[in-house]
Image (cartoon, rainbow, N blue to C red; front, side):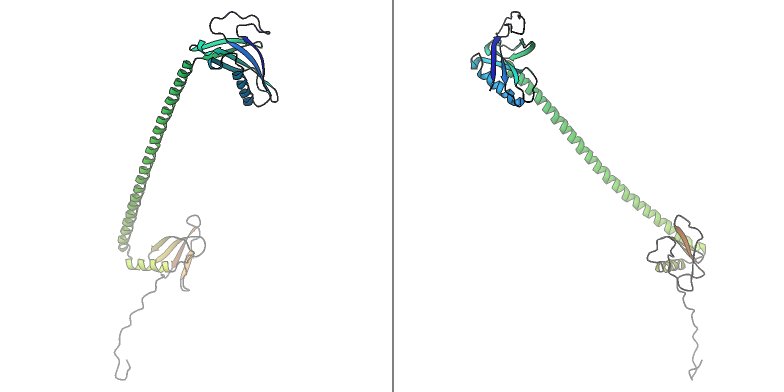
Length: 280
């Protein structure tokens, strides 16, 4: 339980303080309280209850303040000081100084109107802060939405540009191929022969080979393949040769010499009329 100590006026000298100067205005009373060991919030609640119940002034007309005199210690009691004044004598803001256990304690009392005014000020400050935060959040949300929209438009534009670039590259490759095909007659090689060699080479490619390029020069067929394994399957009468050195890293040039891979057309046989006995 709480232990209440002596009651005195603030302007009255205490046992541990010298005489205080006379003060004009409302009379402020002070009481020292002791709360039993416990948690700090429990001690504060008990001291506040004792301060209200042990008020030296009428309960409906009193205004009081409670001050802790020493820091909280685990397992130890807590000492408080309660200050009282008649509420009707406080106009606006009342600040007073009291000597308690050799320490000067500043106590501030506020009237009901002052408390309401300060509450309104705090409310206006809180409202202004809330409005400011709302405006900032709205602006930030708008900026993020605009950024997302711009990023979406940029991604769409980049995608369209990539599609157009691929189309242009494909058209350029087709033009190069077309020019190359048109130039074949100038090299003295029939285009049909070149295409037949390409088709025959494609049919002779090993399934595990990695062909990177095809070469044709005056009936000599060659391919660039990755790895040292022969990339083509040739017949016994065909000769597949590999370059002495790789033309690039792990890329070798393979050539079929002397005979193309396509099957030559048979020579035409002249028709000879048969005799009466079936002989020529």
